[in-house]
Amino acid sequence: MLKVECPECKQWLHSNMLLEKKETTCPTCNVKVDVDELYISAGPYSISREVLRKHFFKYKRLLNEAFKELEELKSESSGSKPYKVTEDNVVTFIDNLKEMLEGCREGYRVFPENQKVAFIFEDKRHECELGNVSITGICIKLAPGVEVPGKGTDVTLEIKSNGFDLVLQGKTVWVREGGALGIRFEEFDDELKTALVGFIESIED
Image (cartoon, rainbow, N blue to C red; front, side, top):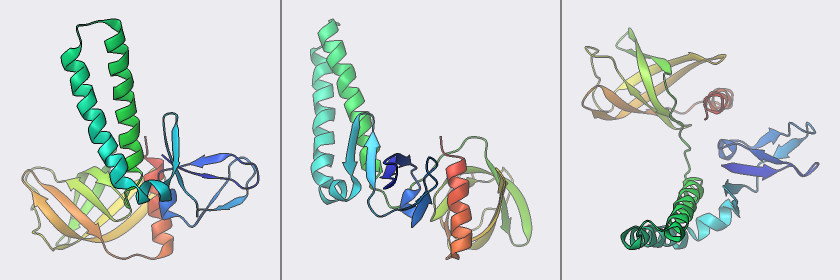
């Protein structure tokens, strides 16, 4: 999870979409907060996003070593409590470190369940299932029988959910069997970007 500190009340403001904003509003003191010094937090750990990105491969190696350690613990374990407790702690450490490294991504994605969007292709409108969405693109799954456009095709997406009414232009970048599509959004203005960020935040876990 990304977070930034309010300079007024010193409260931490949390959102994985902070990277897409220039400023946000503190819900405690209603002060506008510049989003210029981000931190990543997971479990009990917190680190500057800039520092983590600078030393990304060191932490990636640490993650790989943790996976190796976990496998060794599993092979040595005889069901004893000390091994089980240690193994559980290593699993927790791995999960937290993976989450922190995920915070280095430039395009945070959410994977909502049972979320529908409208897909428009060649003047035909179809309801489809949303697989994941970020500020740069979307993955959808078309219903059986719906014509699947080829790679590089211009399409339109309509999102009417959670109080948002968005119309997004995009281009297919990959197509998979079963009607799954990856669509990259075309450039949009600040107003539409703000609305898209708001929609993504509304469906975050």
